[in-house]
Length: 257
Image (cartoon, rainbow, N blue to C red; front, side):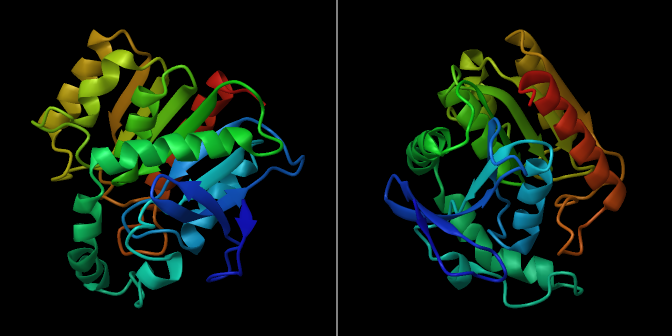
């Protein structure tokens, strides 16, 4: 692990990934040690808001690692938004250019990366031995689920919020791997989300139940896709605080500090 210069107020580290080196946010509790949590960012990328979220989770007693999963496309600084995403139309304009990165992060690339990130998290000083947790936002929810399904002996808690594409018709759909999972799951879906419509939410719930997994699979009424991201026009404070409460409760149940 190598510490990098501050970027946008974030003190980033560099860690090995499957196809090179990836920057990452790292947050620790005051004690410096605790169970590990792997946080998968949304499609906007690593930025101060993600660091804030890592810090809040760390405040509950966890060591939190959030890698730049788009490291193949550029550094954190290179792919960062250049405009205020709270301004009308700015968020939509940014996503028009960002979606090729999202679609390009296919399972054949992301699954080996996840293995490297899991290994690095577990090898960090101060990370408790044993199980870890994972949480993802937007497209990061898919990565969180893939972490739980590809590392079932390690991932004991998995959460996804305003996730998209968790259920698809493809053979490698994230929900298709749930047979191998052992984690407890918590999902907080956005309301009226085209990337996770009601039939997909229902199919995810059916898959979780079919495999006997303990899970919460809820739609947050009135909350738009991206509701946790306070640096964008999609932010919804009530839904964000609900998500933090449910995530904290999940981690406390499964990975007590």
